[in-house]
Length: 288
Length: 250
Image (cartoon, rainbow over all chains, first blue to last red; front, side):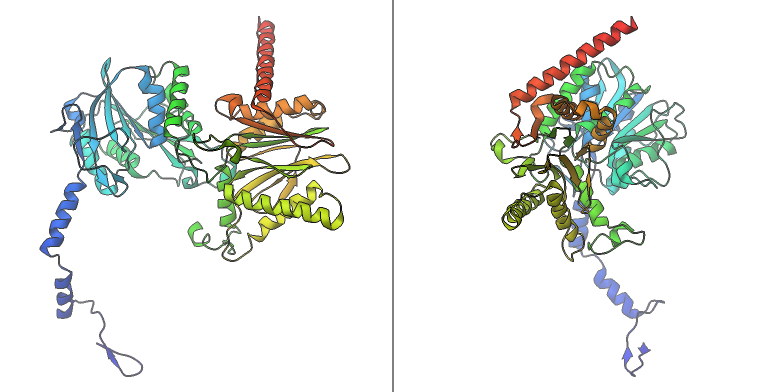
């Protein structure tokens, strides 16, 4: 209780916690319906890996099932287009699984089969060298789902003898620098690596105070904790939609040890890229 | 910090930025590339053609517009904003002609467009125009002009410039390859514009549109065939230059 200047007595919140607060808490306590909704939402947001060919869920983590020496992850449409055009068309890649997940930004329907048009997260391995894995992730993995994704892919005790390469892109307005953004040569690459990654990177390291976000950050943190050599190549671009100039900005990565030998036949790659652009082009008349 | 100072256009940030104007400049970069070149006897405007949907009428998607018989402009950025600015400029050209019985000078109409753009950076509740424009033409004195305006309302005269996506790359190319002597030749000016666009345009000459104004002549839009001929000429020259280079090395 407290008295105001005018003499009226008002109720104030007691920091010690009074009976009245307990009453309020009871009304805030969840009803059985709330709990059921929360359970259902939790089930819906669960990340599950499945094999589309057999329409069955994977019982164990992907990399616990298959041995892996190289793991290349592309996150975001530009990185996915880069791997599709430059790496995936230079060899035969077999699908080994895909991640089914649902969140506010990535509403895949709750069925066991994913149509190719939906935002997806698909895993492949190279037929001629089955320990080389590739992940094409064009859907958004929410914060609460990132750890599940990592556990389902890497497992609870990942082996340290693999090398992880992550490719992703970000808008240049996220790049903090003392220079004016107009003078920056967008698109450009920056790299971030774990302590155990001893090789040289093919572009400058990401300067402070810039940070990495979302799934790429989660993968890199996971690899740092488990002492797996991993490197992230981040392309800062001024065009966030699928853009050939941004995709080609990833080209220096082809000279790195993890991707060397995986990408051949550069001219068909540019042709493939052009095809991807035309199929994905969303007709927008806002800008001319 | 930026988010507290970009809500209303009339507010400066503590370090002197007008964020809405800077964001408008980002919108310009979303438009396809346009390049302008001022020769001795010719002015050239080249643009990267936007891909048109199958059912869309190509004629209604134009980046190069005539403002008057002797002035034309190319823009990059928000299509609707460009339409409004072009309409106002066209009306001003005719109004000027009726009032003072003389056609506008290129500088006058550029200043008019720039002043219009600046007004929208100082008005409450209105956002700036999200376009940059390249304005070319000949004045009565027969001197060719090229001006560029941007969303802040500034304008400058240029010998050659580019706006839109990849403008930086094209500008660097122009800085390396623009020479006053070469620009005395009309054909060289046209080829420079096409070469500059080919640096950044996908799938070559099919995606380029070109317009020229020669002294005392109206605006001429190049047909697709004419552009293809120029592109072939450029490619031949490139091949010959490479052959000479390899002969020298041997």
